Length: 129
Image 1 (cartoon, rainbow, N blue to C red):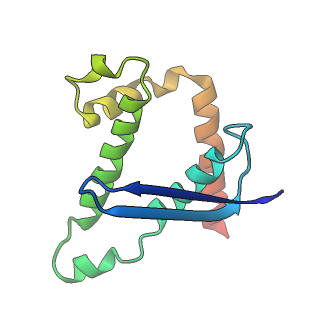
Image 2: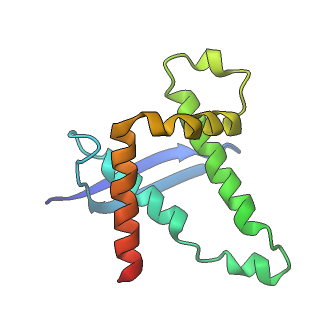
Image 3: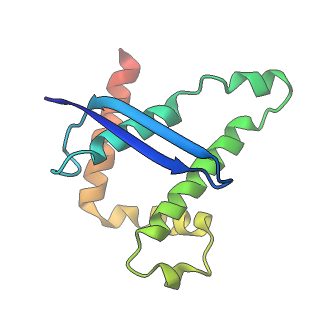
């Protein structure tokens, strides 16, 4: 397997420059053309890496985990909206409503469930190591 590098030059929603560089192995399981698996792998690792979350808690912000989680969830809702066949149709729905609808229907798609089950097995195996 060949090591890949992915560089994303973008701006955040406040207009500040943001450069994200990811070096790693692309499994090419989600997409045969490469890049997407590495992107997902890096994003999942950044989400699960909670270094720094204890500092706000020590200062009394016991809701920091919930605040960070809702921002991640909101962004996933935005991704669902942006990748919809008809994003304009979804204008009246919040990102959280889109997530709820997605979760209510995820059981209907066997291919998506297979991806989820495989990922859950990887998480469990990693936790045991």
